[in-house]
Image 1 (cartoon, one colour):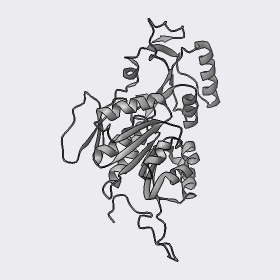
Image 2: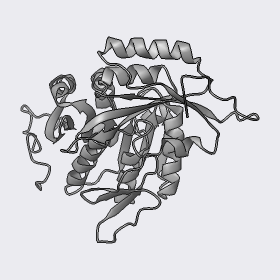
Image 3: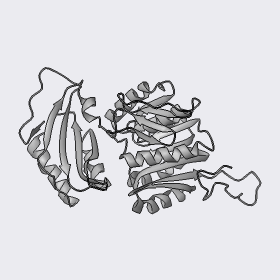
Image 4: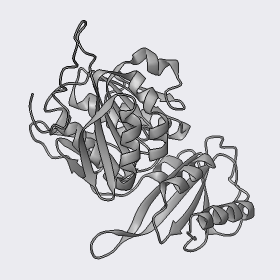
Length: 335
């Protein structure tokens, strides 16, 4: 990588290559900033690079990918203005690099230790995988890149799903804003009868997702799609869904609450994450307005995952709605 100066012109014609721009922050970027960065690039990812004595992040790296060669002075001015609008400033110079076709996926992989959440074991190619009854290994090389979520939000979704699996099965699963498709893969690896649709509006994320699906041997049961929200007809045809994951941002979750309800089967469950604890009230209110009720939440400060259920309609001719047996219940309980 180089700082400030114009990036070297790539040798030869490599239409699948990408431009990478990296910068660092000394404060966490808010969700609105990440959304703006994603809108202005092919892909945006962020992760902590340094931690304090309590293992809390104190420095963040932001990676942006572009199809066309960026005009560095203009991009730098635009980024600095965007950061200033959120009360932030870059820590150091912009770093720019050309990534040939064979290198761009490797460049966005994050080096991180394996993650164990309930029955799920998230690992890379080189990590040894422990053996044990009920263990579900998930080979996810792309780490946190391409919208697969800050690891606490992904872990919260896996924790919620692990608890849900103790009570029922989910034959039809939708992973909205799938990123690496880790949640769709988890659903199909945990139950050989499950089928999933993994959707993202980032074509590069879907490219990574499709590769992860293949590596986890569930290619015949996971469809990967590039789509904005629920717009693709294939999403409707594969539903209604017994389980919908949506590990995205609070504002899109609120905006798509009605779409989620329409695609969720009666009695179906939704796991929503990618939101901060202070945003949970607004997200929950939007979904309650569409007939969904909270049955649990997973807190991994400062993040939270909401577990919601679409109520079943009352029996025909019933004068009173039957009490919902899962309302305010614990995920760990049996019914």
